[in-house]
Amino acid sequence: MSEIIETKDLQKQYRMGEVIVEALKGVDFAVREGEFVAIMGPSGSGKSTLLHLLGGLDLASGGEVFLANRRLTRLRDTEITVMRRRHVGFVFQFFNLLPTLTTAENVALPLLLDGQSAKDSAARVAEILEQVNMGNRAGHMPDQLSGGEQQRVAIARALVADPKILLADEPTGNLDSAAGEHVLLILRRACDDTSQTIVIVTHNPTAAAFADRVVFLQDGALVHEIIGGPFNVQAITEAIARVNV
Ligand SMILES: Nc1ncnc2c1ncn2[C@@H]1O[C@H](COP(=O)(O)OP(=O)(O)O)[C@@H](O)[C@H]1O
Ligand SMILES: [Mg+2]
Image 1 (cartoon, rainbow, N blue to C red):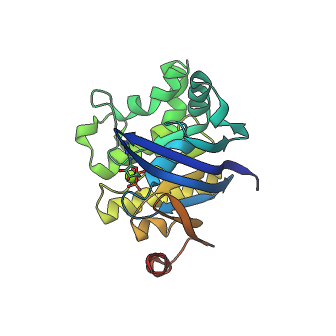
Image 2: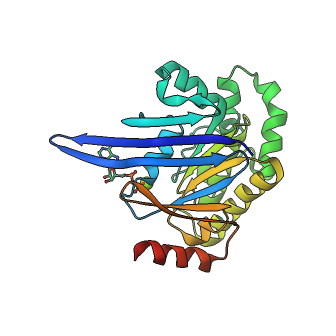
Image 3: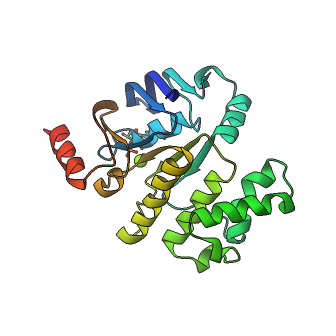
């Protein structure tokens, strides 16, 4: 399997007036095509920063990010936007659906922005809504959906244009455990059935257990990883305990 994401000595500093926060201190990280990776670590360890840099949502202070064999860290803003639109789907903790659009309209949005007609996009929208078990909610407005349903719509929207990579920051952070598990089963299935590459950030051991590999960040550095998932939740909690020693 080839590597679809790679970072080399990736660094990110935030300047807060006189204070410089070192959020990433030289991270070497790679994800193979079709792999499902979870990033864990305490609050403030740099998880979101890393995910944002992988998806070109923010700029590195040093080092490199390669995405689908392009060096993201040397591209101009407009080129990064094109790369992101073509290759990356994002899912966030708070769903971020447009409140005035139906489920189907929210999911169609990336295709319409890409120049497809509503008519042409309809079949693909229906297909991806089935994949997230939301085929029977196509006409609902976001406020008529539960949190778990909204997140599954957000996943459908992220996947509708067939991105090479799905990046999700705490995708179950705002869901109860049953709804969270449903979301993770859908991600796991996307990986198993369509070789979707997935990187999630989570501090929930149950969520991380669904991944093929879990990496642990601490103070802006990768300090540990476990491979060979999906895992027992116990394997995750043991790894967390080991990292914190
Ligand atoms: N926009 C920002 N400006 C200044 N500091 C930031 C900013 N974003 C994150 N940080 C700091 O960088 C560190 C890593 O943050 P983050 O990547 O959000 O961590 P995590 O997602 O693991 O909780 C934290 O110390 C945080 O306070
Ligand atoms: Mg975060």
